[in-house]
Length: 324
Image (cartoon, rainbow, N blue to C red; front, side):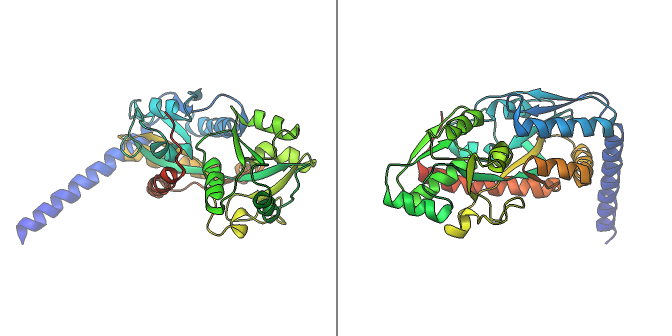
């Protein structure tokens, strides 16, 4: 069928032309500064990761990589800035798990999470933990559950981010196990730590890096990792899922770009970030921050984002938590 062969040849020709075009774009990009948008205020482990990554990418690209802070509304302001930026690869957003929770948690968003972004790579998974004050009358997850059941209304749980995976996990735990304890929300992790160290709240969920120094010197107690696995630093402590089957949450940090960013640019950013993450030095630095390097391909990260959004779409309505 000559006609079919002609169509196929034309299609292949277009494909080769597109690949050449994409290759040319990747070779010339970036021809100027790149913004790495962080949806938080400066300070903390996420900012440390962002600055580490920006420094390494600046060395790789021989162009300035500027960390720009757009905090507020549980990452919504920063994500909106990225969504409305030019799709030329010169604006990249650093997102955390709130990015996938917000569509279910908020009545409205100024962007469409599914349509206005494309994933570049998951940079890291973030280890989060349930910790308790030193005077708490329990030392592990099973003891905490037993105490909470026997003493309804007596425990207080401090949370620094309403709607974060760790917060939603604890609220799911309360609902599933029919536990009665008070959730107290604070404006940030530093305030949570202050209240915990002052023995004014009983327990809290925080990134491992935020409480590692307190765990090391014995000022707080590790009750359980919130992921499925034990921690390398504290292998003797069983994760939450060992006590409550099927209940776990791992936070993530990843890079996204505006939806129409060219394939070649996305592929180049992923390849360069993955190479940085593969270095022993970067992996060591991430481990020091309580994170594990990932570096997933764009299509894998896109799938992950969709799956996480669907997961929270099922969970959040059951908990009755809504943010304006």
